[in-house]
Length: 165
Image 1 (cartoon, helix red, strand yellow):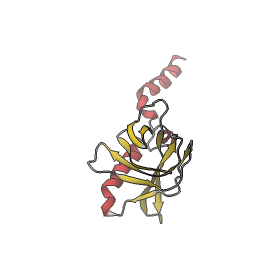
Image 2 (cartoon, rainbow, N blue to C red):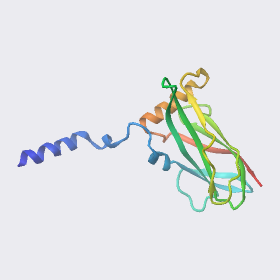
Image 3 (cartoon, rainbow, N blue to C red):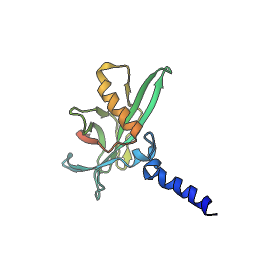
Protein backbone atom coordinates (compact mmCIF):
# COMPACT_ATOMS: atom_id res chain seq x y z
CA UNK A 1 0.00 0.00 0.00
CA UNK A 2 2.82 2.41 0.78
CA UNK A 3 4.33 1.85 -2.68
CA UNK A 4 1.11 2.90 -4.42
CA UNK A 5 0.93 6.15 -2.45
CA UNK A 6 4.65 6.85 -2.78
CA UNK A 7 4.79 6.59 -6.60
CA UNK A 8 2.03 9.17 -7.37
CA UNK A 9 3.41 11.50 -4.68
CA UNK A 10 6.90 11.21 -6.15
CA UNK A 11 5.49 11.97 -9.62
CA UNK A 12 3.64 15.07 -8.39
CA UNK A 13 6.73 16.39 -6.62
CA UNK A 14 9.01 15.75 -9.61
CA UNK A 15 6.72 17.58 -12.03
CA UNK A 16 6.71 20.76 -9.90
CA UNK A 17 4.55 23.89 -9.99
CA UNK A 18 5.82 25.12 -13.38
CA UNK A 19 4.24 22.15 -15.12
CA UNK A 20 0.79 23.75 -14.88
CA UNK A 21 1.96 26.72 -17.00
CA UNK A 22 0.39 26.73 -20.43
CA UNK A 23 2.53 26.24 -23.51
CA UNK A 24 0.70 29.05 -25.28
CA UNK A 25 -1.29 32.13 -24.38
CA UNK A 26 -4.86 31.49 -23.26
CA UNK A 27 -7.95 33.68 -22.91
CA UNK A 28 -7.52 33.77 -19.12
CA UNK A 29 -4.05 35.28 -19.56
CA UNK A 30 -5.53 37.99 -21.78
CA UNK A 31 -8.42 38.71 -19.39
CA UNK A 32 -5.96 39.43 -16.60
CA UNK A 33 -4.11 42.03 -18.71
CA UNK A 34 -5.92 45.32 -18.04
CA UNK A 35 -4.52 48.85 -17.98
CA UNK A 36 -6.64 51.35 -16.05
CA UNK A 37 -6.34 55.11 -16.59
CA UNK A 38 -7.37 58.36 -14.96
CA UNK A 39 -8.19 61.36 -17.16
CA UNK A 40 -8.02 65.09 -16.52
CA UNK A 41 -9.79 67.24 -19.09
CA UNK A 42 -9.90 64.30 -21.53
CA UNK A 43 -6.13 63.66 -21.27
CA UNK A 44 -4.70 60.50 -19.66
CA UNK A 45 -2.65 61.52 -16.61
CA UNK A 46 -2.08 58.16 -14.94
CA UNK A 47 -2.31 54.59 -16.22
CA UNK A 48 -1.44 51.37 -14.41
CA UNK A 49 -1.64 47.60 -14.77
CA UNK A 50 -2.53 47.55 -11.08
CA UNK A 51 -6.20 47.78 -10.19
CA UNK A 52 -7.19 51.36 -9.35
CA UNK A 53 -10.44 52.77 -7.97
CA UNK A 54 -12.91 54.36 -10.38
CA UNK A 55 -10.78 54.59 -13.54
CA UNK A 56 -12.06 56.62 -16.48
CA UNK A 57 -10.75 54.14 -19.08
CA UNK A 58 -9.70 50.53 -19.15
CA UNK A 59 -7.58 49.12 -21.94
CA UNK A 60 -7.87 45.41 -22.68
CA UNK A 61 -6.07 43.01 -25.02
CA UNK A 62 -8.87 40.55 -25.80
CA UNK A 63 -7.56 39.37 -29.16
CA UNK A 64 -4.14 37.73 -29.50
CA UNK A 65 -4.39 34.54 -31.53
CA UNK A 66 -2.13 32.37 -33.60
CA UNK A 67 -3.47 31.83 -37.14
CA UNK A 68 -2.38 30.08 -40.32
CA UNK A 69 -2.84 31.76 -43.70
CA UNK A 70 -3.30 29.38 -46.64
CA UNK A 71 -2.07 26.55 -44.37
CA UNK A 72 1.56 27.64 -44.77
CA UNK A 73 2.11 31.16 -43.41
CA UNK A 74 1.96 31.71 -39.66
CA UNK A 75 0.64 35.00 -38.27
CA UNK A 76 -0.83 36.59 -35.17
CA UNK A 77 -4.19 38.39 -35.05
CA UNK A 78 -4.08 41.05 -32.30
CA UNK A 79 -6.26 43.97 -31.16
CA UNK A 80 -6.77 46.15 -28.11
CA UNK A 81 -10.07 47.57 -26.88
CA UNK A 82 -11.05 50.56 -24.75
CA UNK A 83 -13.72 50.39 -22.06
CA UNK A 84 -15.17 53.88 -21.61
CA UNK A 85 -16.02 54.76 -18.01
CA UNK A 86 -15.64 58.54 -18.45
CA UNK A 87 -19.35 59.47 -18.83
CA UNK A 88 -18.52 61.09 -22.19
CA UNK A 89 -18.82 59.53 -25.64
CA UNK A 90 -15.45 58.42 -26.92
CA UNK A 91 -15.21 58.61 -30.72
CA UNK A 92 -11.60 57.56 -31.28
CA UNK A 93 -8.36 56.53 -29.64
CA UNK A 94 -4.79 55.49 -30.35
CA UNK A 95 -3.14 52.92 -28.12
CA UNK A 96 0.47 51.82 -28.34
CA UNK A 97 1.61 48.35 -27.36
CA UNK A 98 5.23 48.24 -26.20
CA UNK A 99 7.47 45.54 -24.82
CA UNK A 100 10.20 46.14 -22.26
CA UNK A 101 12.57 44.19 -24.53
CA UNK A 102 12.10 46.43 -27.59
CA UNK A 103 13.07 50.06 -28.00
CA UNK A 104 10.34 50.87 -30.51
CA UNK A 105 6.58 50.49 -30.38
CA UNK A 106 5.34 47.06 -31.31
CA UNK A 107 1.92 48.05 -32.61
CA UNK A 108 -0.27 51.14 -32.64
CA UNK A 109 -3.97 50.32 -32.38
CA UNK A 110 -6.42 52.82 -33.84
CA UNK A 111 -9.94 52.68 -32.45
CA UNK A 112 -12.23 54.54 -34.81
CA UNK A 113 -15.72 54.01 -33.45
CA UNK A 114 -18.10 55.57 -30.98
CA UNK A 115 -17.78 54.05 -27.51
CA UNK A 116 -20.50 55.15 -25.12
CA UNK A 117 -20.30 55.22 -21.33
CA UNK A 118 -19.79 51.73 -19.82
CA UNK A 119 -19.30 50.23 -23.28
CA UNK A 120 -16.23 48.64 -24.86
CA UNK A 121 -14.89 49.07 -28.38
CA UNK A 122 -15.02 46.13 -30.76
CA UNK A 123 -12.32 43.89 -32.21
CA UNK A 124 -13.82 44.01 -35.72
CA UNK A 125 -10.71 45.69 -37.13
CA UNK A 126 -7.51 44.07 -35.94
CA UNK A 127 -3.85 43.73 -36.89
CA UNK A 128 -2.45 40.71 -38.68
CA UNK A 129 1.27 40.31 -38.05
CA UNK A 130 2.65 37.82 -40.59
CA UNK A 131 5.84 35.78 -40.37
CA UNK A 132 6.67 36.31 -44.06
CA UNK A 133 6.82 40.12 -44.00
CA UNK A 134 10.43 41.24 -43.35
CA UNK A 135 9.46 44.72 -42.13
CA UNK A 136 7.49 43.31 -39.18
CA UNK A 137 9.76 40.34 -38.46
CA UNK A 138 11.01 41.75 -35.14
CA UNK A 139 7.43 42.38 -34.01
CA UNK A 140 6.40 38.90 -35.15
CA UNK A 141 9.30 37.30 -33.24
CA UNK A 142 8.41 39.20 -30.05
CA UNK A 143 4.73 38.20 -30.35
CA UNK A 144 5.74 34.60 -31.09
CA UNK A 145 7.91 34.46 -27.98
CA UNK A 146 5.18 36.00 -25.77
CA UNK A 147 2.43 33.79 -27.19
CA UNK A 148 4.22 30.45 -26.92
CA UNK A 149 5.72 31.17 -23.51
CA UNK A 150 2.30 32.39 -22.28
CA UNK A 151 4.01 35.44 -20.84
CA UNK A 152 2.80 38.95 -21.60
CA UNK A 153 4.21 40.47 -18.42
CA UNK A 154 6.66 42.60 -20.48
CA UNK A 155 3.80 44.18 -22.44
CA UNK A 156 2.87 47.78 -21.73
CA UNK A 157 0.00 49.70 -23.28
CA UNK A 158 -0.33 53.46 -23.37
CA UNK A 159 -3.10 55.75 -24.58
CA UNK A 160 -1.53 58.30 -26.92
CA UNK A 161 -4.65 60.02 -28.26
CA UNK A 162 -8.30 60.28 -27.23
CA UNK A 163 -11.18 61.94 -29.06
CA UNK A 164 -14.53 62.73 -27.41
CA UNK A 165 -17.84 64.15 -28.71
